[in-house]
Amino acid sequence: MVAVVARRSRLLLIRRSDQVSAPGKFCFPGGAIEEGETEEEAVVRELREELGVRVQPVRRVWESCTEWGVHLSWWQSRLADDAPIVPNAAEVSHIGWYTIPEILGLSDLLSSNRQFLQKVLAGDIQLDLEP
Ligand SMILES: Nc1nc2c([nH]c(=O)n2[C@@H]2O[C@H](COP(=O)(O)OP(=O)(O)OP(=O)(O)O)[C@@H](O)[C@H]2O)c(=O)[nH]1
Figure 1 (tube, rainbow, N blue to C red):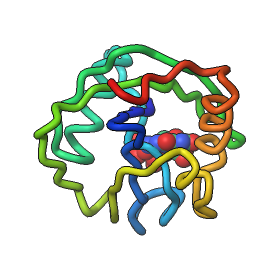
Figure 2 (cartoon, helix red, strand yellow; figure 1 turned 30 degrees about the horizontal axis):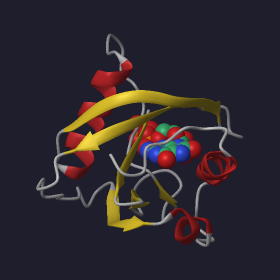
Figure 3 (cartoon, rainbow, N blue to C red; figure 1 turned 45 degrees about the horizontal axis):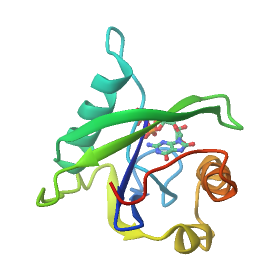
Figure 4 (cartoon, rainbow, N blue to C red; figure 1 turned 30 degrees about the vertical axis):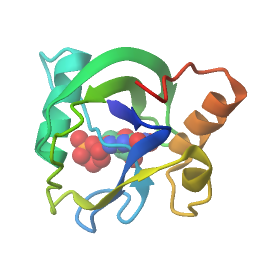
């Protein structure tokens, strides 16, 4: 599950910690679905574990498969404006709000995220950037 959280034309991006797979890479918050969970429940749980925030999944905007065979569901999700973000250091080394061109300029971006953003720019994926 991948949570795409937008605010004033910026997207919430994390940098993966040194202790998880793909260490140091930039991507969106999220993680694997657990047995018995709906996709929405997994998004809510992952964001609580990773960033200490409660999000509301709004709409699945895309599905894909990574080059390494992981199925991904991309959920536009809403975060309360005043919600403080407290990254779980075991999983996340950094968080920030970036514009799409800024994200595409990062060399350490996961390839699936680059593909996602290129599709957003091309108009193939509808994302509300000012929710
Ligand atoms: N969280 C997250 N994962 C992503 C994104 N894009 C992407 O390809 N992935 C891939 O999705 C898979 C699961 O992500 P994760 O690493 O956060 O989840 P996890 O801790 O539950 O599982 P793990 O044991 O594979 O690390 C990884 O293979 C990761 O590389 C993204 O934007 N956010």
